[in-house]
Image (cartoon, rainbow, N blue to C red):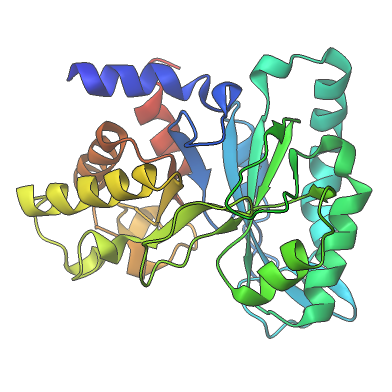
Length: 303
């Protein structure tokens, strides 16, 4: 095990205790698609929360009869749990306990990432209102008059991220008055990443195809060229002031599949461990996987 990997593993346990305006002092395990599909796989959130803190958690968001729900598709049917019930009320005891104990050096405990499957304005406004209900839990920053001026975080137990769509920025940033609190933070446009981080856009979210263009199922052995692309992307993102996430790196057999997407699968533990090792060494801030327990064990061996 290299010295850089050992250092990365040690940092993982206290990652977001050191959150700054720049990159997360990670890495963090990022629990991909952490919600039920069609009533199945209802234990995903509990599994992610059982791994210890800090941890990142993805919630895909859609709309059903005026409420934000967690769903892998915008074609909702009414069986989907609400975002409020599935995530916010589930973590309430954790958040209230954290606020009571007031161990600010350990905050945020959870980084929740909203992947919106529907960008209609009523949905976005509903989520903004929902975040207002839980604002005492949420890491915020004041909106500055100059978007290029990154305000200091008021760090709380929960940090909320969202993605790059301009429709989201219109509701979550443009409508917020200067001096008022930003409740969540968007990602950069990945198509042409040249702009520096802004007060609203603080992270960047890449498909793993940016590293291995052939995609996970067709990827061969991990190569020096792959490693060079990974390091170049991380270096560029960090140089522009962004945290960086890649989605999604899995390695499982058919017998191990727990409702996971074959499009993210390298096919074996050996193959995905090589990628995780590279991500850790490169300084990736958020490592997204469906195999929560396997990555947690790899990041913190012996636990």
